[in-house]
Length: 118
Image 1 (cartoon, rainbow, N blue to C red):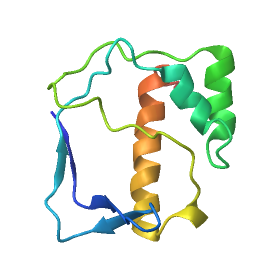
Image 2 (image 1 turned 135 degrees about the horizontal axis):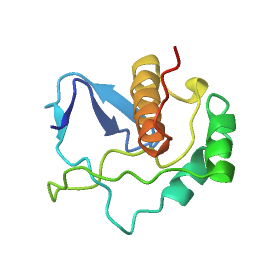
Image 3 (image 1 turned 180 degrees about the vertical axis):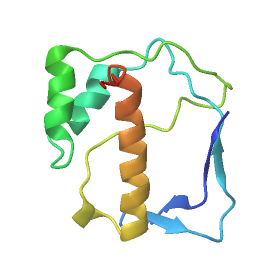
């Protein structure tokens, strides 16, 4: 099962900044499996100084992160993954919300299973 994203990111060719457009076709990603060569440590390292979740990422890097065990490779591309750190001041409101979702989803895939305590 893939993830539908209602807003599509395009790149402003003059500033190379992401811009959200609602008049573009929807983005649909079916791949949920990372290739065996995916650099999890490097991707986490790019997020380690983020003001929102940098401390959490540093903990994953020092205590150990969990490589996702399963998923579906549709052959189109790896799952949508954050490639560099950003903060809310760098992006427009909707772009920030989408970026935050992508980062939190990625961090959830490499985090230990949560434990329910009664």
